[in-house]
Length: 101
Image 1 (cartoon, helix red, strand yellow):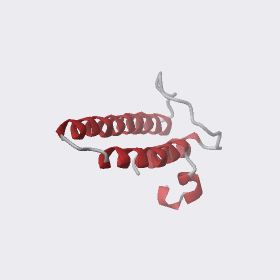
Image 2 (cartoon, helix red, strand yellow):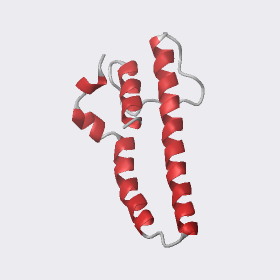
Image 3 (cartoon, one colour):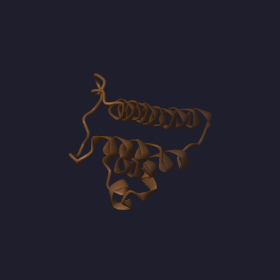
Image 4 (cartoon, helix red, strand yellow):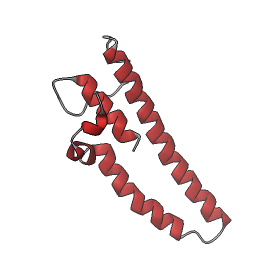
């Protein structure tokens, strides 16, 4: 299964993708407002926090996809898929794909 074959509308309308589209202008504005080293450090902290949140979510989705493909139950603490497609593995893979973009 190739995720590039997925409907682009599904990718762009995914809640995580929409959240990232809202975060980007905020980060750009924060970067443009940097006037000194302290401002730059604060910006880096914000950027790093957003990156870490994304990586953690991607890792959770990746583990969930692997477990579902192996026929196991989701690990404890893994979020349930946001939609109810016929195949949960596809949804997890799509969520993982969105998080990596």
